[in-house]
Picture 1 (cartoon, helix red, strand yellow):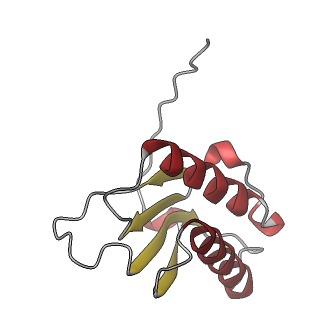
Picture 2 (cartoon, rainbow, N blue to C red):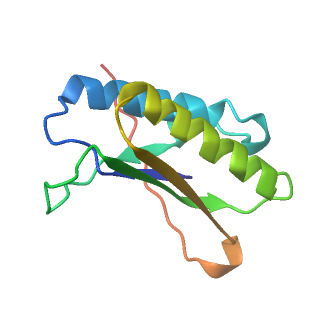
Length: 121
């Protein structure tokens, strides 16, 4: 399932805000009907940047591991990218540049395995 990786988030961003951003990115992805995904199928990561200069000025979003399917056309991928940029912009309105790159992959080009442990509360 797709993985959203966001670079350039300011270091001072607290965990509550990151959790809310992740939830909204998942919801924005699921809202693109042609993807036929639910929010729980989307993973989000916010890797730490080694250089602190410029954090928050430019934010780059990558969507990786989105499997190619007939309904996932370039227009659909552009709609996903636009939705994710809009979502991040709502959290960081002062950011000068936000870009999103969607990298679809073919099932024939990758190996894949999964493990999922249901967590009950």
